[in-house]
Image (tube, rainbow, N blue to C red; front, side, top):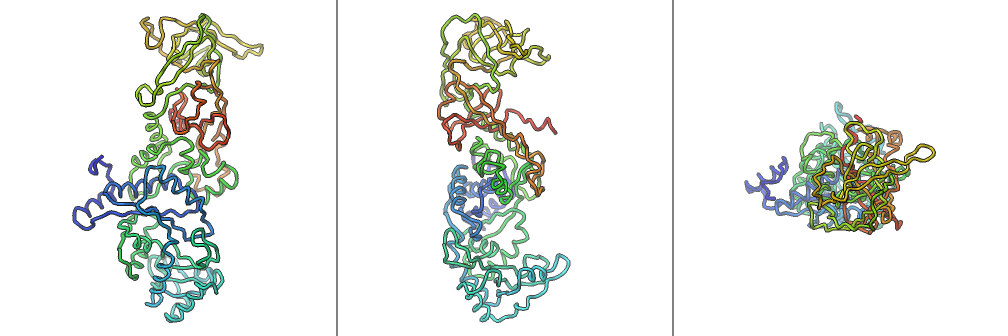
Length: 550
């Protein structure tokens, strides 16, 4: 697809205009996650935007870990983030860590101090908070604000040398305590943390804040377009103030867009971690989690997620996206790539009473429109299973499956006619007897018979037992992020485990393949289950089942 054919958005249009006017000659973006948790669907939107725009305009996108909070970060999260970005199909131009720039950032902090643009404040956190002011009232200058640059540098070096306790001092920018924008009221630039860093070890005991590290890291990397979500819009004046005050070579520009708010979903890393720690889910990659790892394990494809991000677009208007838009994109993508297979989740035995041959081998395609997926072998014989939902003794008018007064085609097999039903002593249906019409074999049918229904089935002697996990929404409310107690709105039916019967090749290891169980849903083998038995996770149902519940 050419640039002109791509779905447009205001950021893309802005970049195209800048190139046309000769204002920029290259496009460098960055994706800067904090490695304090796994990436989620909201990050996927930012990844697609940053990497996608750089790719479109022949530039590059850097992956930079914003690792300025060592107590919350780990190598596990770093590794997971790299895996997720690559799984989505993107490759970074440069891989970096804010920690790699700690030395340069420290020198720039000294530059601000020496120029009278920063000072060391020894007020307590509570004192600074109370003196900050409000949207209607100005703040109050710190009693330490007018120290000389020499005094501030000496104190800052004490902070750097580990001679001051945590919380005893911070380095603040010296801007204005009466600024209308609260982010300009002498914001903190450095704080003391006597914590070992996952990357730099114990080399530092002071760490820059996000606001100080963000723009300067962008400048170091030559970023031209720093794309952030709208909550950082009020931080842009500080971003620009710091770039003007420091001897940086680049001048990146920050542009904001609306973050992804997804119905019935929590994207706060803190709250997602709470779900993990409380055991409400099996881990960050639980298929019910909105993490990229969870969606990958559930059976979403990278293209399905990217299709979703394309459909929701990029705007500055905050809005909540309905979950069925995500599920619809996943469904539309899987329809064209999934192997179509047969499995029954609630087996009902069917005996073909007039079948007196041996088992008949049927070679059928994995997908009728995707020959590249190849073929597999099914067996047809006297003893079969269908799904119990495909038979009704007293069917409604719109029931087009097997019933006492009807006939049905067994997919890839024959038309069968109802003969009898067998019940146990408690009146429970045990099995159904049918007769097959030998003139109606699929692909060779010249009988002229027409039936309205076609159902799936499995051959009893060759059927394989499968564990099928039916995943649904994790929450019962559209706005779980607003609940302090997430346990109060958990969907207790978000996971239902069934023992199903499937065609024989479903027992083979096919971890990369996507499947559609005929008339049941889309599934994928569980990549995270340690057992040897075949486990299939339902990625998404064939239709939106929640629309009916609203």
